Amino acid sequence: MKASIKSDFPIFDDSDLVYLDNASTTQKPQQVLDAIQSMYSKTNANVHRALYDIGSEATEKFENSRKKVSNFIHSDSESEIIFTSGTTESINLLAHSLGNKLGPGDDILVSEMEHHANLVPWQMACSRTGANLKFIPMDGNGDLDLTNLETTFTDSTKIISITHVSNVLGTINPIDEIAKIAKEIGALFIVDGAQGVPHQSVNVKELGCDFYVFSGHKMLGPTGVGVLWGRMEKLEDMDPFMGGGEMIETVTMESSTWNQVPYKFEAGTPNFVQAVGLGAAIDYLNDLGMDEVFEHEKKLTEYALERMSHIKRVNVFGSPKSRTGVISFNVEGIHAQDLAQFLNEDNIAIRVGHHCAQPLLASLNENSVARLSLYIYNDEKDIDLFCNSLASIKQYF
Image (cartoon, rainbow, N blue to C red; front, side, top):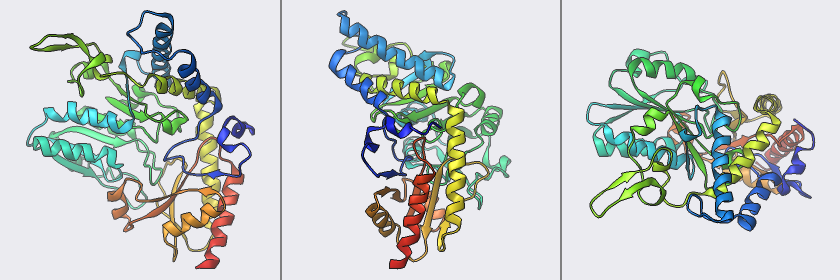
């Protein structure tokens, strides 16, 4: 990773901020901020509607971002890319459109490590339809336990929805392996890629899933925009989630017909400015190279774990076979909230709490844990400052 990368991020200008909360949201490079500002100041017009020049230009930039997303995740067509407000909306859309086709005796399968956004919508779907919600457990290392395949994956399993990467443990799940099982039993397979696609190269065709969802703000883009990718034949078979605006083809007093995919899932005015910002973020990541992004985080994670292993009373949760730069930990005798406040005195930003994953924390017998999460602009100096501050805190407890 180039040494000057922090200079692309205005938040680090003339600042000693050590930002280690990237699983929550990432900072924005100047290139993304410029793209957003340019849209508002030069081409601010509603897309798909106007015949005047700036309206046509706004539409072109918006649809070009759709192409960038498609190429970034290696989908067959940009028509398979649906813009949403984020991962949460994407999963809720699927839970509504797919979940409503289920009934008593049908199973939805998630894992014990899911973010609430990939759990609560399925609980709601089960409440509506009478379907059953079942779980893939974790083993002691923080990996999914796939040893009891016959009892976990059955003919009753209709939908499987699994996170690509745990937002608490950093576990990279074997998505391609689960996809093969899903295909064998005829289940639809959804992947929550919020913590996956920002940190590694993703090829949805090679993964073998039916749907892949993620958020822009976790990959250098703006808030308020996310992506739902789905196989075209699956999307065409789904009912819309919301009504009005772009999603219609015709409307009469009695009934309506729907627009083609992807527009039948993009009701109202889309977040076109944010989508262009996401396109700029993708350009930035492509310039770095996603393989280099992954290797940079891998080395930095190994360095962080090594440094932390020499600090007494620090307990790191999980040791998965394959992981990203997400490390959750606690310090014996110090509440996670107090820990975060002390680190903040040194301008070090980490996250504490249940991380929207209360079932996972319950399995760890914890109510709150501290979490550091790394990204492209972090370096060994950040880790050294964090570890030095962490070691010094213990003298107060």
